[in-house]
Length: 527
Image (cartoon, rainbow, N blue to C red; front, side, top):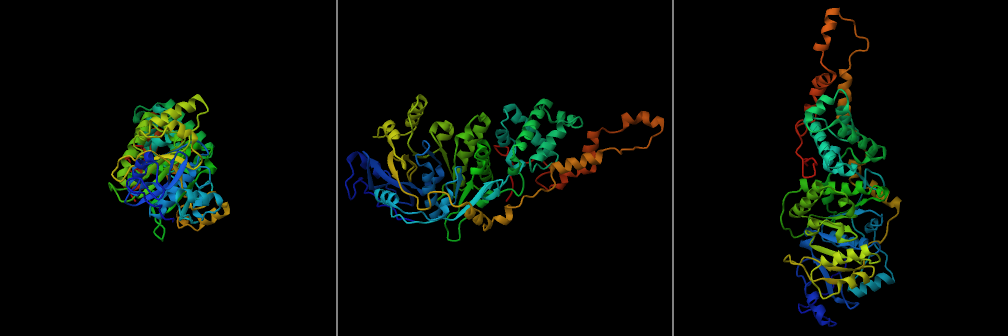
């Protein structure tokens, strides 16, 4: 990795004297401990390589925001930060929506533009690739398949994916509760569909009434939403083997942090699905990791791309759960960076927790753009810059930055020319991606989907067992008259059958009682 630029003197002076107003800004980034080098200070359009703009490594779990209009360099900023985190032994998770982050695995290509940028920012650039694990939702695309069981995903996140309203979300929660208490494992979508179909059938309606607060009409809406969702090809994302998020925390043999790149181009037409899946990954990490408090360096830094999709049309309960997860996961050593176009895409309660800010250029072509620009300026501390003018005039690869200093206080706002990534700035060949996936140590664990016995199979078997014989022998007349009163109903036969009674015993100690669920309704699980 390249050497850090020379740290400025405390008074902001350096080999080439900084203008007086810029000296306090430069001094605000003169950290003594380990830090990531983002770029060099800009003042009046001049780049000052003797004044590096940096972010302290221990502050990366205080979360952050990378924002800016399309084409302003956000992706390269992610790449730059991910490289330096990996070099310092911190695992990174990147969502690659456009498919151009895979190049982080290969050394970059030099040239005049890279040489010029390195000279301007005081960077000793050298081509270098980094250890990467490629992932893909449901195995669609190039990557190790990332799947979740329906039980683990939970009713709140699933409601977001299905587009259910608040009442329907609560009703889906009751259905999960019913499946938990009956020991019906919800592994894939057909399991959940089977449970809802049973509850909406004539035989299952008595069970539906017993759940409380769940109407037949609402259950029917949920069933139709599930059926339509499955028909759109979404079934691949749910099932087993479920991805263990502990695999995101690994280090390479040389001690560098592993960069997990979730390849999303194959599902970019399903934005709500992948944004909600990212939230599931984050929630699952939150469940499993122990409290560590303040740490010398994060255990993981998680970049949440296209963040506005997560918050769009989200219920109040969903937003509250996101806010609480982001607030609490810091103490577990995980930093979260939301990546979007403007800060207004992120709710204020979440934005208030993002201590590190990298704001690329904004456009002001329309009244809405101008409104967004003014709102963005208000989110920054006071500074000697005219931020409205500055934010509309930044070039590609330039940004306005403020981070948390080593003592946790915000640094001065600094216009910055960012360094060039040292890995390849573009995608690698798909054949190379596939080869890397097959050679991954995770391939044997996750590549092949498994469809074991779960709710669908158990309900099907129980109902088949409860079916009366096709040609039942005729009973004496007196007994036939008593039959309606003595014979159990079909639902009683199903629920009372040996097959159904064994459900609670068949799934061990975790299922067979109601599963303990989190803020999002996702199931806690042991590692």
